[in-house]
Image (cartoon, rainbow, N blue to C red):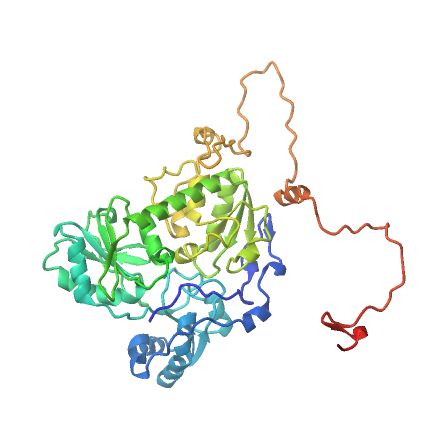
Length: 516
């Protein structure tokens, strides 16, 4: 059972931009959103082959889901499916209604991405719990809601994967972490059982699923990163371990577009080996070259953000916890760096939507870790789309240089209270005066415009007060530079005439044209 991490349809009427606090400059016009008719007429994509009825209970773990519903005593439960699993949605809902007696609601489309829990759709249905099927980012929801995740159980050739691991890791004492895509997580412990007699320092990761209500946290508490838990021994660090990833497919047209693998390659220690293994054939691949390409691309985006004067902040989620704090943090970053920012609540970003803002130099997508790294065609968008971590590296002069700073895939790691949070230096810090040359244009970047002038230290001359413009709109400046600025009303210059009856009909056949 596999599913794409992104519903490719347009946003629906559940996109509620009013959930964000009103910013200074916020553009939320209905003309920039997909019409409701398009959401009703769209095809939901390939639903995939239906699962045989004999395998339905095993693939969708219906017995575990039924126990989850009965233990909570829920009468209304939402079932969230990605596009590729909608073919089984009706059968799964009917089977669960029969075994639990509860009313099931199918959520077949989401406002932003299928990997996040759709708390907005759940609220509209008035449900008491939600069951999420398919790949998930496992980000905590913005509102408390009991959630059960069914990641799927893809078949894994354990013997082939074990031989591939031995070929990639000849050193039996080297520390290695077993990773996998969500659908293969069920097989990691069985794979570790085949390898542990030989390998002394083997660590098995597991999905960071929410703990059951009333359960105690394990001691010692495992490290949580990349949507996974790592049971590290006391005194050990994740940066000491290499990685062996089980997942992917040889038939994938472009493996660089897998957001789950991309976040691991970007966030893993660059000096540690990282290899992947196809669970069907056991074919392995060294991911060092791919990780280098991803890091080079992200460093280029950081340089683009440093050159940008206008930044568009895209609201890519309304259902993940602390998204409002992250939005305020990004706005503070852009203001401190002397940049203008617009907050855009447009649903899923598409080239047509973002083309309405030609004055914006770069866009920053505030979304879950997988949504921020979701596949985006480089030729589709006329401006680059960045992750929050790249804007932090571009606007915060206290951020460590490349090679020393970790690549943080979740925006919550940038906020106060996180061990990775780096506060902005005070306005009088020398870090703001450090010369900075653009690696793209070769020009010297000016210091932030908001920084107050230093005391000249001379009282003989009185400095004339500086005149400042009350409001300077980049959109207005961009519009004034265009040769065509739209229709001119010409009030008072048009002669007054009586209203006349116009033509009736449609463009292909007006009534006065007759039939041909």
